[in-house]
Length: 229
Ligand SMILES: *Cc1c(COP(=O)(O)O)cnc(C)c1O
Image (cartoon, rainbow, N blue to C red; front, top):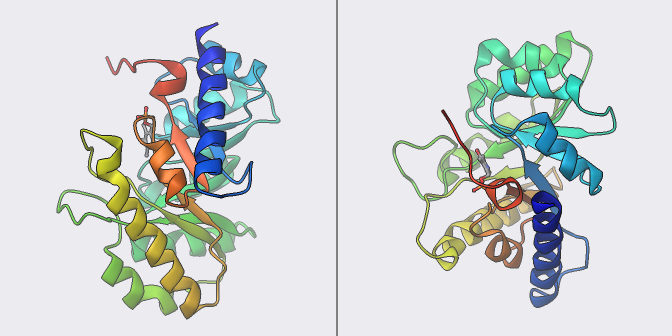
């Protein structure tokens, strides 16, 4: 039972990281990133009690959501095109994690209003300033904060980041610390509590927890190597 063994090990690692950081036990949520893996694999995690899953592509999520038991919760963690916002909101997506521009946030707010709902989102921050990456730069986010928090049909729950890959998990620590400090600054500006920090993947989730992650997004360490073919 490879997947269930992996899940148990990751949960133990999460608990150990929480303890090292002096954080309350259970203050980190494990998001199982199931992209590219079949429903049969996801069901193994389900059988072990996992209920929260993350998909990168809306199309793939739309195929898996109806195939899994209804008590699962789904996050969209990949980029969302503006012309797919309505579809995303009509799905049972609990959290759109990678909102990477004011334009996208505005589109989500507008369409959520049309659908009579409030969309829960995270704002993606480009913490290490790579030109090729998605997300708000920290400066941009500070500048646009008043405008973003005034959007009516959005529940901005916090921030997320996908730092550039590093050879050692420790290499990601500065990026995680940057996201945490940015959230602290934005909380001071008000008016949102911003409880969620989504950061850390298979390679570096323990470091992310030490730096304050409340959601870690773990795929390959649970399900094994991804085959994109
Ligand atoms: C694929 C993916 C993950 C999981 O990556 P692993 O290294 O397999 O844990 C986390 N976050 C995002 C945004 C992803 O696309």
